[in-house]
Image 1: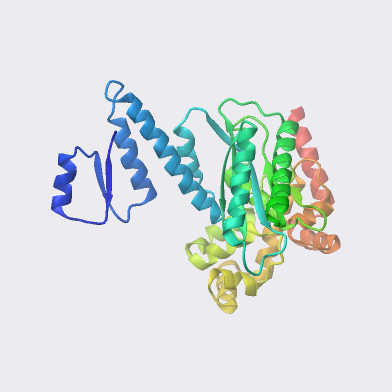
Image 2: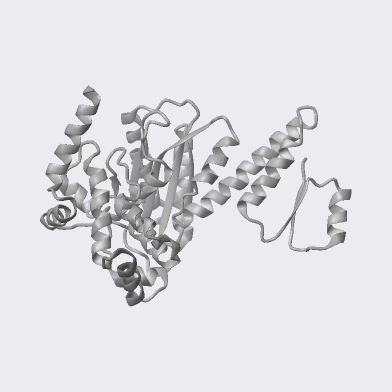
Length: 363
């Protein structure tokens, strides 16, 4: 079995001991994830077919398990490490692309008690539910949210309607189990992408953002909300403009924008966003105004409008539903804000986008 040392002791006798034990590599803490992966991949690569192929296969399985735990930790913090997902998929030819994402949150945040442990139970239940249906899932749970990514098998053909029913079925069954077995009231948001890999459908981070937006509007009789099919919900032109202006080099501003993208459908204010990223409201406001020429409210509205454009360009979805998904409770107010930034009404934008797509197909 290939061995790699990971140690905090930077001493010559440790290195000599490692050499005597025929250790493949020696890493000093703190070692980054890329450094650990590179060392393990080098160790596995040095073992040819005649030099313990079974051991190398076992080590590869162990590496996959380690990577899976690393990915769950990232997902628990609402981060989607696409590079790590790529490495994880490469360890086995049987893993295909991410085809769906689900987000869980409390219907009513518990004042005390359940916390992360109970949402972790929901995350684990999602993994089991998808495994029973022939898909692999990775899920991580934080204090108030859980995020789950669903991976297809390599070459697995997934019918659009079948995938939709599978995703919604797993979400409903897990919420029911949490309520019946643990007495927990949890809501879910889901998004999925049916189609061949490389066809321009949303990637893992985009699916996760769509699921997060969907779970933000769940409630009032809707325990599970499905985001519009294949809505390309990557950060819009507003986010790209902020990045070009150098705003993303500021950690507080980067955190604020990431929070807006993740919780776009929630009631966001300058005060609560600033508090969540650890700066004062006045500092965040000055930072946004200096770099973008806009205040917080205009930045938020612009990003919401860009996300709304993506939803309106997707399959059948009403203007009212889009308004709720991007954080507007009043459709009339949404229409006014949309026209201010887009120069047209939401309905006109949707109709024009669909006519354009039809023209592309005809060509």
